[in-house]
Image 1 (cartoon, rainbow, N blue to C red):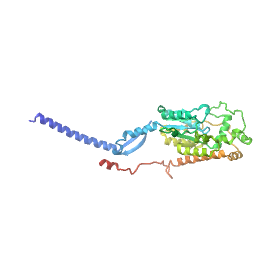
Image 2 (cartoon, helix red, strand yellow):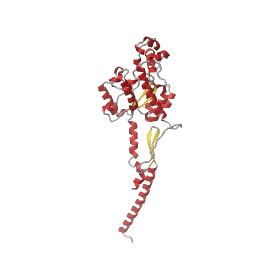
Image 3 (cartoon, rainbow, N blue to C red):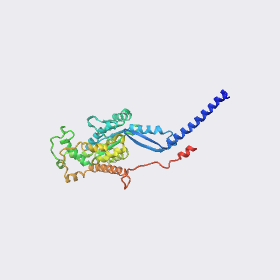
Image 4 (cartoon, rainbow, N blue to C red):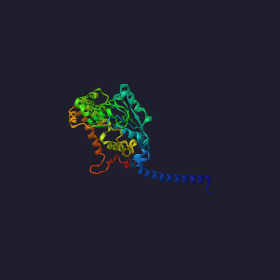
Length: 360
């Protein structure tokens, strides 16, 4: 007859054996599952694939951390669109306002006293600190007629993504000239500063009036150059070079007014958190040409030739061509050469070998 002592020992051994079997079975399932793990980042109704076929060694500490990192990055987006007047910015901004509720982000207009394009020194610091720390407004899209402001000079831990549109300088000047006289179809009943003045741009140039002076084209360069005094000195070579440096190094994307569809496509592909669905919406909406200047007369060939003799036009045009070449370069690199296939990348030859490290 089995004593109570031996019966208890037998039960203990049986339970221990069952525990070992369960542990081995469970461990095998977890390892197999981890080897086929696919991490997804939720993005509204869609999911963005981040990693696939990642083994247990690679994801042991990254299962939650990777997802959290990607989400935090997307949710802290700050985009600044320091829009240049008469470059199609109203159409683009209204598209962004249409998307903000659908894609759950904030749009804020920067309104500076008396339409000044440069912030005072105290306001520069206040603006930079405010945008950096205002987490409840992120993700955010800020827009306004303001010169480029370098966040790094204020010691901020992060920088926003700058974007912009640029237009052929003479086209922009002619558009602005007639806009001041006749307004546009966006707010047709608003009386403009030069209302009643019927002088054409050709006549203005022939009479050498101030409204068509080539120095009035000096606007895109200072907007990209920034808050330095020299940026606003018409004809400054230093300002032109600084504008090109800023455009190349500090702007995420600069598009062309006449190629806004392509600009929006690049934004949707690059920043889907904010611009998901932008291309379709822009094509189907009535906002692709939202602000068209009325009664605009194209300048005569002799007028164009005279304007192009000016140093200001030559410099502004150099910046425009610099931006155009970069924009077309970015477009070209979207797809594999010779094939209509989107470019992709992957990680290979990862060392040390994850499986080998796990065995050791």
